[in-house]
Amino acid sequence: MRTDLIEAHDRAWAAIAAPGTWLTGERRVAVAAEIRKALDCAQCARINAALSPNGVPGRHESLGKLGPAEIELIHRVVNDPGRLSESWSQSVLAQGLGEGEYVEIVGIIAMVMMMDTCMRALGEPVRRLPEPRSGEPTRYRSKGAKKKAAWLPIIEPEDASEADGPMYPSPKAGYIYRGLSSVPQSLRDYWALANCHYMPGQYIYQFDKSIRAVARPQMELMAARVSALHQCVY
Image (tube, rainbow, N blue to C red):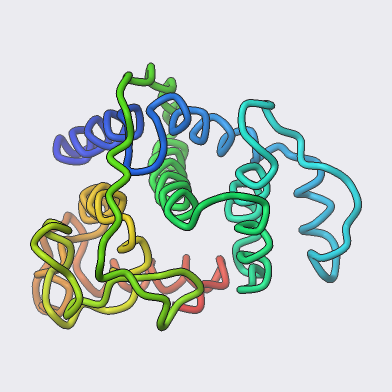
């Protein structure tokens, strides 16, 4: 396992354990624990087997440390992301979850799933969850966040401010970079990890070069196959 990848995992778990923008360190670690619990949820299995995810009776099997909205968000994003909808996302928010909390939780899901999947693929055990760090969330709200091209507000590159901090690899960054942008720190934490698993943004369009052990065409062939298997629209 590459040294930079190990270091990226170290930083990511440290970030998850620390207070975020809207969640305390304790709540963030509880989210990480619930992500792993969701993988064995019988209710999620019933939902996945159903023709439609709506109207399947029953409750998610949870650890009991988070509220219903958080449980629904985590379990559905982990187990059935391809059938989520804007109306579903609004129903989660209607249960009292803030938009910033929603985005921050999704960011943690993406990070934990990435790291745990990587470790399992390598035949290694997943890491033990870190001890949460004390402190208060920053509760930073960007003035540039607007509901425009997504279900929740995002920050377009032209609306980003100095107060938001560094966010995009270029002024023309694609929408995949903008998904977590209404919580800038979650965006930075995610991409610091994702770039080590794939490659930094400045290399994306350099198709004749590779900074990894496999050639770029090999990387893209594997990525396309995995995306197809996961029904990834992107």
